[in-house]
Image (cartoon, rainbow, N blue to C red; front, side):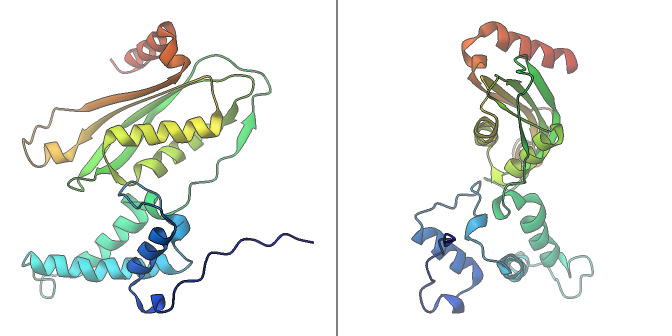
Length: 242
């Protein structure tokens, strides 16, 4: 007899009349799941609701523009701004919150590779969760596989980076999340992730310093324990990026 797929608990009566954002939030709360800016909430969004959510964001963005005393009726440049911004947030710059992880085929390490692999620089784009200003930078990934590790295709590193980075967050947490994801998929002996980025919340506002960058790293396994391996990885990055 075929196994029945567990069904999601029925929504309480009256939920259907709520705005879609409140229905999604109610599901998250019933499941005891948080919904921070950098959390993925895709499994709590029902088919068709992303379009509803975009329409709700558009309506509320129009209210924001009105509160900023911007004439969206006679100004041809801003007549469609609310729709464009809503679509941008949900389907582009914050897409990593609302869509499931990209499919990634994992291959067994048949040749028992155990040498350092470096992927990068991968261009990444994110947004600061404090001001929703862009974070644009590059990521380098170092992997020390073992005979039991899973290997993934080169393009999949970029897809996973984009999925993790397409959310409002701070850089320190973004790098840790990416490292956790790669560790879970590959199970290597060692993993290193380095990110260097420009933060527009510092360049566009505040001190308006256009030269400052932020660099941070996460080291796991043999990269953390073996100082020589760590030096080799960082030296190779410096050689590629003097």
